[in-house]
Length: 212
Image (cartoon, rainbow, N blue to C red):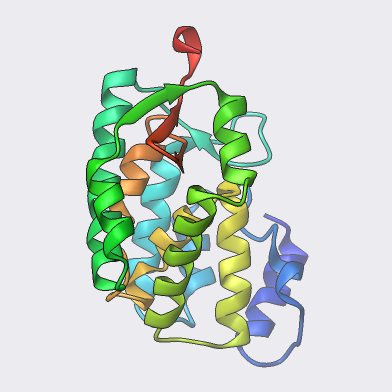
């Protein structure tokens, strides 16, 4: 951890400093120490739960020589597909509660299909079903948040940059939006190397290793 950045974070959380959200984007990159994580979350409600969830994410991944945390285990195709189905079931529940019956039915019924990384990435970038689902998830989380402060926004930025993954960050801060989405199934999917995108007629799951 950058000691200067960490000291600035403590000042910022105490209201003795003003910074833009992006300033703290690298705060947690490479951090694994529970005590340091405890200090990062100390000024937030449910600090112990936030720390425990951050440790959950770190235990599911590895840094190695990467800038961002990577899944520690590349699960086989069957395990990833099962984890993807559990995640889709949770998203279907959320879509129904959000008044999206069509999306709910799609998420319940859509087949899971292994696909090359390039196809999954293209689907995630396109303005299509994956983008629409992402917008619904974002709206649900934002509406359920119980804390809206500059410090919360900066924390979200730092958590996103652990693995360059918004949903893992929201898994960690789930105690601050408890009525939104259970991101535990997403963590279970991610830890197996899961990366997916909703397209017309399928939920694509990135194939890895020999499967790709």
